[in-house]
Length: 231
Ligand code: SAM
Image (cartoon, rainbow, N blue to C red; front, side, top):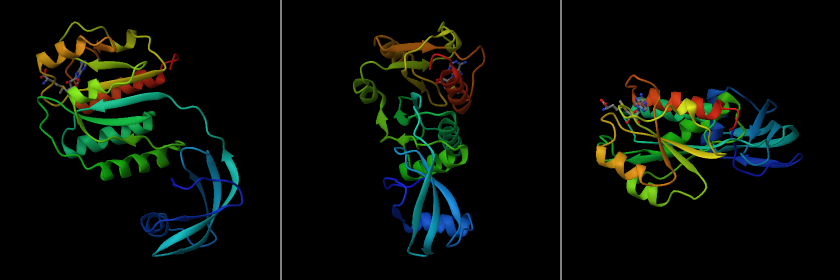
């Protein structure tokens, strides 16, 4: 279970109503039951439920099960698509190990509404399921121009570009800190691709000869970036 408070053996932490509901009604745990908890900072700990009711729960923190480990520093930036596909992108990106999820609106974006809270809950559930020690942050959605203007130094941005002479992502060596940007159903506008290519930190890349759905492109690209030995 992902929790907010700092963790140390011997501590007693409180969890909120929603998490207590999840623990009691979904996971069917009762007072005295054990579970593992993590907070993205201190690693993973054994815990025992002390009290649980509809207002919240208290957990007694036991021994550390796993120390915090270094995690890859790869962001996924993507133009939000239909709800189910966006949900799938967030879930799979979390499983594959991204450190941040950045919704980006582009010229041809058809979906301009993003429910960050819902996507955050999907990321949390996926992190718990795949036994990550952290939950990727789902960032505030931004326009493409703002995303590029605020892009940090020292990170490289691979832009998934179909139907261009972009080199395959599979051929790229990459820095420790990277990001993958995937376009909307209608693709990037030609002007957007030309504009992005002018930034030194941008490398357009191909994910193969076929036109992939945005969700497939995100998953295929991240699988390559996050499984690479130099990552
Ligand atoms: N409307 C575009 C078309 O018909 O040519 C297709 C866009 S595709 C459904 C959505 C996004 O997935 C693209 O903007 C791109 O970022 C990514 N993508 C899809 N196939 C790709 C490929 N073979 N190589 C690189 N990126 C790809």
